[in-house]
Structures are given as structure tokens and as C-alpha cells.
Length: 505
Image 1: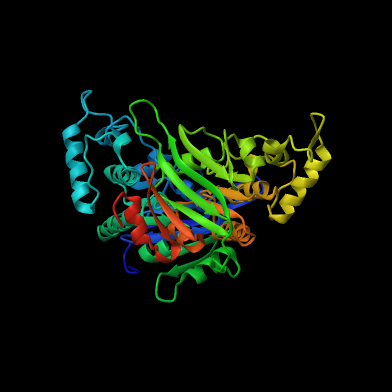
Image 2: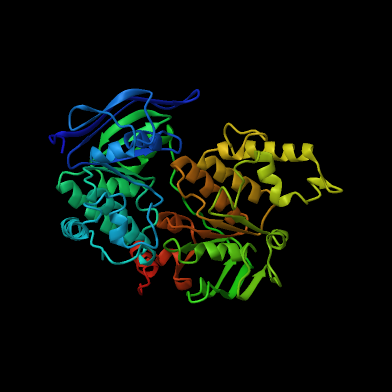
């Protein structure tokens, strides 16, 4: 691979936002047929660097060379014309249109007509060559998440991409779907396509890449060949600048049942299948129950029903032996159920408010924070300052705008708020999604501390490594129902992946 000609060079890239350097003197190169891992903590500058390459931002200094000479990239159209394609973490597809229509968006046509026959032939050719087959007539709304990602990759190749940037490409895939993606990437590399692979899943980075580039605080700290000497521990240390210990689940005594749900059902719009179908499970004190599943199989709705955000169509919820007649967020809070939603900004916190207001909003009526209908601002600020200190929310004050925080600090803020009131049960939905190693380590410690204190945790996650590391039991959801339940000791990614795909394990 080291003998292959250079496909791309980024030299001395600088990018500053105000006084903050997002990238400083970054050098990165990519060879024909190479899969390059781009790693770093949240805020390390990975996304900024790739947005510069794809034309979303302009660099303050430096140059980009594609196949030799310097290139001028003023926008995504220039990047696409140079053969640079990017598959974002959130797909850019039109749900009601067909695969073929999504593929041809933006094509000028000839004589006012689109050449659909040529597009079908090109789609079939890409499918055969790289194992990325899709039916051109299917609408995007009928595609599974993995198929939608496949379509995004096909779109980039259809437009002539020879450099393919993939941002967290396996975050919504089952292990089997991830293996299918890796097979396609290997076929692309064998055909000379260069791939830049961004991921926080270090085991996948080690499995698919030829080299890795590590960024820390906007600076390249290492460029390493992926050989026998490279392992997760070394990469994690380079990313964080310190030793990072793997998550270990200590022994814990099981206590009484703290949360029980029976026959939970949530109807959808007329003519569509139920979102939740007869879901029953329990969470005991001193245990973490993991919920696995591909995104969109009812996990988010399950969390919101238990938290009182959504009213179920049928079923029963019981907290510490008390049946809940009608769940609302305030009722569930009073019963000791805390909720960390997957939508940090929106359902969890409000970007435009100060940190103090975001943290206190769901709890403003508590006597600790209000008297005779008036907020006790001094008490609020003292509470928020203590939470900021205890949870190491860097660069934050009670007056800082919530939306100015990074993803990792937003998650810390949510955890700080929800754990402040001594919950019996924590419902944590995707609590580490998109977080770097250090932030993940912090969140894991909080969840294990709750478990060790005899509380219960319902952990909803699409990261099977996380579920296997933290959970005592794992239930799998598929199309709104519980597809199976396994003790963590008997679970493995392959078995869970089959259940996540609706097949018997």
C-alpha cells in the first residue's frame, strides 16, 4: 500500500473560529486503494477537516492536492467534480422518492429528459462491482437503515467519487450489516478508491484500515500503520493524551424490582403497524438492563413512554411496587424515574437557554428552587455551579448558552441534572452516541456507580460493545416487540445481531 501513488494531500491546513484553532498545520495524505482511519476526541477537529475537504468550509491556510496538482474547492460541487464524495452520519435522502430518483437528483438531463436507462445500468454496475445491490424502483421509505446507507455510498460512486469520506458509518448498523459494509469497502479499495473512515469504534478501525491519523486539539499527534503493534489501548492514549481504562462491570447484588412494564402497546397512525407491541420487561435494583436494536425499532418510544413523555395505548407501568395510573414526566420524576433522552438538544436541553435555565427547567417547581412561584436564583446558580464542578463540564458557567457546549459536555450536563435528585431508576437512551473515548468512559462510570448503589438502569444503545460491557441482561427489540432476552454472559455480537435483524439467534 505504501507504494501506491498519492490520491490526495492536505498540507498545512489551518482553520480558526474566533480565537479557537479547530485545525492547526494539519498534514494528511491518502493513497489509491487505501482505507485511512481518522480518529480523535469530540472537538479534535476531524469534522472541520473533512468539511474543508468537501468544500463546506474554507481553510484559513494550507492547500489540498488531488491526484497531484493543487485544487481549488469552494463548495461541495467542486469537491464532487474532483471525485471527492462524503457520506454523512445523517442521510440526505428523499423518503418518498425511489432509489433511482434519489440517485439522479440534480442531473440536468438531455433535451429536457433524464436518461433513466443509463442510470439503471450504472446502478447495476456499481451493485455487481462492489456488492451494493439495490432495486431502483423501491422508495427510500421502504429501505432499512443499512440499505439507506448503501444508497448514500452508491450516490457518491455514481457521481464519480474516487475519495470516499465515511462519518461514523456503522453507528446504525447490526454487526452483520457492518461486515457487509466492510466487504464493500475492501472491494472499493481493491479498485483504487481511497476511503477516509471516521469512527469512535476502535475495534472497527483496527479491522478495516491500513493506516490511522490521530488528531488532538486540532493537531496531528500521530500517523501510524495498522500493524500488529497497533491496538486500542495505544490509539486511546494518543487520542486522549492519557491512559484510558476499559470498562469493567464489577459484581453487584440484585435487589427488589424497581421498574416493571407489562403488555405495553403504542399504536401508530391508521394503517401502520403499532410502534410498541406487547412489550414487557423489568429492571431490578443493582442491575443494568440493556436494550439492543437497530434504530427505529421502538427503543426511543419505549423510553419516552416509561418517562411519561408519551401516553401508551395499553399496558401497565409499575415503579417500586406502585402502579402508575397515568404517567407524566412530573409523576415519573416524583416516583424516582430519571430520563436521559437521545435527543440532547430539544427533548433534553434547550440550545438557546443558559445552562442554569436548561438544567432547572424540569425541576423548577421543587421547593429547593422556588418559593411562592418565584425562582430562587441564588439556589439555582449554586446548584448548577456544583454540578458543573462535579461533572467536569469544561468551559461552562451557569450563564453559558447551552448550545455552545460540545456533544460530550451536553451529555455530561444531562447526566448531572438527572442524577442530582437520587433516582431509583435511570432510563438512558443512547447516552454515549457520538462521544469520544474520554466522555464515554465518564458516562460509563456514572451508570456503573448507580448500579453499585442498588439503583436500576435501563440502557438503550446501538453500540453492542457498550451493552456487552455494562449490561447484566440484554433484551433485543425488533419492529416494536421484544425479539429475545439474554444474560450478558450468554450474549455475543453475532447472536444479538441475528435478533436485531428479526432472525432466531
